[in-house]
Length: 390
Image (cartoon, rainbow, N blue to C red; front, side, top):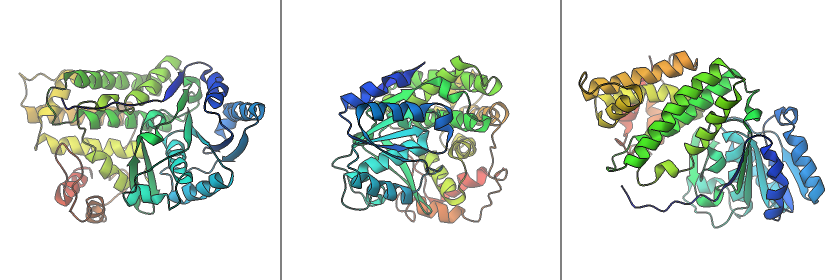
């Protein structure tokens, strides 16, 4: 196990009427000017918009809103909101929705306190010195961004991340009832994203990490079980609660402690979603089926362990490579048959036309391999994409 410092100050209000804590949170942060960031009119249907507006009106807080967030959030909107935030002296950016709204809010919070272009944090190695407060009302269990230190923003074909404890939200409000009306597809891709976050953390070279191994395995078992439940019975509020809390646990960095996760699969998917604007969770389903198949023949040990502990594949019956391939098949079965997602690039109508371009972009022309379990250079990156075709 590696040495570590763990820090996560996010305050969480979870469960029925969790939004009842909003006014208290705003007072504690001494909020004077709030920017509400969201996507679409659903927040009004859920009663969230009214709850926020009632709170800011009661407390005399200046209120600005923008509902134009899109999936794979764009730096252009971030820049626009940074300007609005500066003009209105915004001291809290409140995101309502899923990862796209939250990551937009995080980037805006950075930009308001910065004199340069906000893209500098994502592409040019600039380290933030300050950020305005961030709050979250989560309605889409998926990214875990509600308590994470990371944000992902797109600029054309470049989809890049920034990590900093300054952008861990001060509070997150999570009421599983808000997720009951999610379309089946959004529920499924959210579950796939949660599982992907757990898998990325699991595949590590660090030894003596039994505690986090078992925690991740338990979380994987939970998301496999409750992912099926919410797909088969969308009104199961208990399964909805399990999925929503797992999303947070999967990405609040507790499961990173003492270990180094892989994250190569995410870098592959970021190129795919930047190039083709596919949905992140479905992209992760495609990539992880291919990545595990590739690693089965390159470095199967950790994959075999997961196959044994989660899917009961016996070491006495198979080689580690065979066990790793069974793991790939089991993941494909879950994504495809249980969640109803596509698991190949062919199904997404993506050819090999841009494979080399994406691999070179991700690895900075083969000078900076991605991932840690086996660092992926251009050749490995392309080989995995080829396996993802069908």
